[in-house]
Image 1: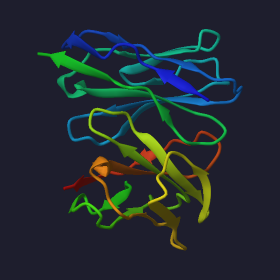
Image 2 (image 1 turned 120 degrees about the vertical axis):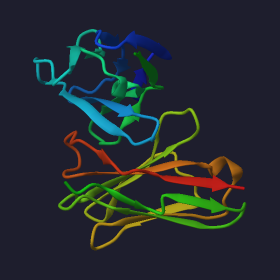
Image 3 (image 1 turned 180 degrees about the vertical axis):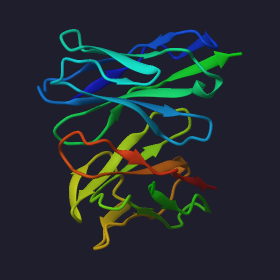
Length: 113
Length: 114
């Protein structure tokens, strides 16, 4: 079975600074996809970024980028120029052949003004 | 842009009652997933449908059932409710099943069982 591990329960960052959220996963599948979802206090689940495992290039979406290390099974999220609106719970998630999402436990990110 | 619609947004039930949660996908999305998120927990997969057929099943209690209709909306039926069923229930939809297509989440239905 696939597992996703987020070992840091919470982090804090100063506004305008950069922060990196860690995620590791375990799988025996060769074709899979990784995601970061954001869940603000409203509890809405919002897609931040998606990475296809067969692509070498790290995904980027504006201030959000990933460091995907396939051999190490690591998938970290970097948030640049942090904003107050980035304050949320962030979930790392995996999907493979069966399409369901397997989530990590999440990390609570607080952006300080 | 159109989003996933879930109704109702909030639901309060007594123990042993029945609840029905509804999900209306984004247009042209024929794949529906249901997730349950308990307080302070990560979302857990319950069940999924593709083209009106069940495609996968997770840790869904036998008291729960679900289906996808001809217009692709889906309903999650929950019977003999227990206190532990209190949670946020998400529906997520995708355009394609089985290719890691992005799942877009609805706002969730908050179920409280008293």
